[in-house]
Figure 1 (cartoon, rainbow, N blue to C red):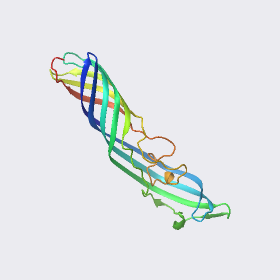
Figure 2: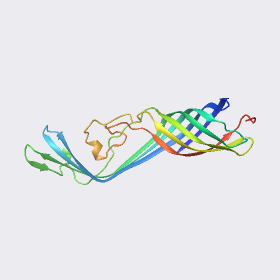
Figure 3: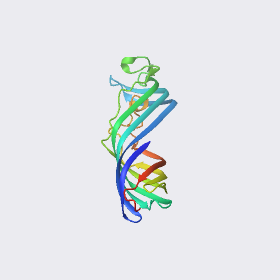
Figure 4: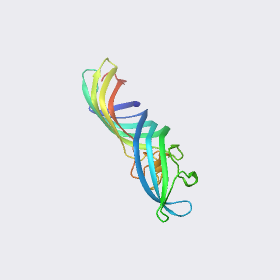
Length: 225
């Protein structure tokens, strides 16, 4: 969901520039009924161990609210006399306002020690537990701002001498990483769900993106348009 209010002025008949201020909210949900993996690590006593990890019914929900400053160039001729088309190109500078994250599910961890041919389980002091509920113990901070490209195209419809209705489609494509921290490759937290596995993934960049429809009102300050 995005809401913007702004101002633009035409310096040629079909070209204008503008800026604004707004809010945007992004939500995503990642889930997995079941997965398993094995990591070769060193335990607290310095022994080599194959950690067997099982995760059931993992659900992670992320919600972000940003304050936005869009800057754009608009091509078109919105006016109070006839229906017209417009295209808007620009950039959006976004600043995080709120961030919420929840993670639920169950994990089971046991350890196989190939040197001793032994499998250890249900020893909490070594980190081996069965059907343990996921608890968020490690999470990321967000970058102070992010940058997105904006593309919008639509139609403007005059409804009075001062108001124009606009209807169109838009795309926001993030260019910068939004998370301030990534997990090291092979970090067990990535698999256990006790951190935001999407934002903190060591395997790539996470950006904000949206695509959808827009509807708005243009108020004409110059009635000669």
